[in-house]
Length: 100
Image (cartoon, rainbow, N blue to C red; front, top):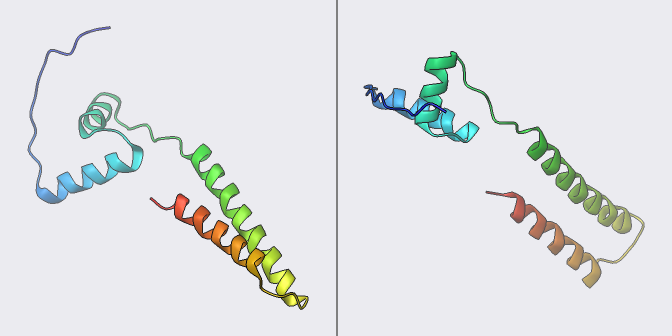
């Protein structure tokens, strides 16, 4: 592997730099990596979010199922008891765990 020995500097406006930083954060790379990939390859590889989105969708589906079960129970004349409260608390913990 060839060692990187050439160092260059670039100037950006504040808004240009903010734009670069936001793009880097969205694909989880450093600004240096972003600029190198763009300069050498002409494009930047995007982070594969498919797996993360699939896991998030599964968690949201579980929460939806729990809410549907609670609604079905209440619509059939069921009483909202400690078990129902416990289910709602589990849903809240799950949702809080999904938030950044």
